[in-house]
Figure 1 (cartoon, rainbow over the protein chains, first blue to last red):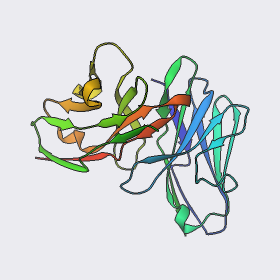
Figure 2: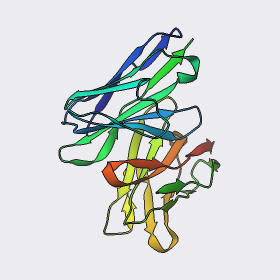
Figure 3: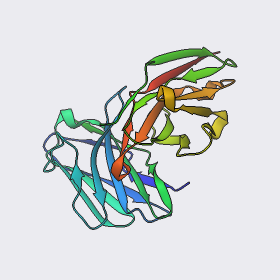
Figure 4: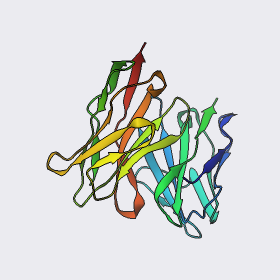
Length: 115
Length: 112
């Protein structure tokens, strides 16, 4: 299967700062990337879908001005949590699909803790 | 809208015993179904998927799942559980735009 990486794996930041999380498809061109959020002991909730070169599509209830998504290339998407607050603390997981793959491949996740 | 239900939040099973995890879906068209496993603090690993064809699907790590359209189910099974199978398991259905809808997950605990 294809490989998707995320960086950083863990980040701790102060309230009010912004944090950027990178998602990379290492061995295939990802025309579509997805960003999920997972609270402890809960399932994954889709936040947004991004297609390379176009604006992301956000799910209902997700603030697009708070969670900025950029998908400028076929191998990289970024999620920026702006003016982070403690309630933004969560596990963020990206996935990617594209090329010959009609399924999503998941990154290892990023644990964000906002103090 | 599509939805996925995993009725069991927790399942405890003895090592070497069989395991079955239930998954029921609601989707208007032919579903594309997936089972993923997640170890603590990790991302998701695909166990198996069903797109079409044979309704009994074989996956990695000795898992299999059976698609039953009449019951809207896609239950996951393993004949003999290993301690390393302790994890969270998610069933998912794929909708338009390649979006996945996940069930709530089932946490599997393995007793020695």
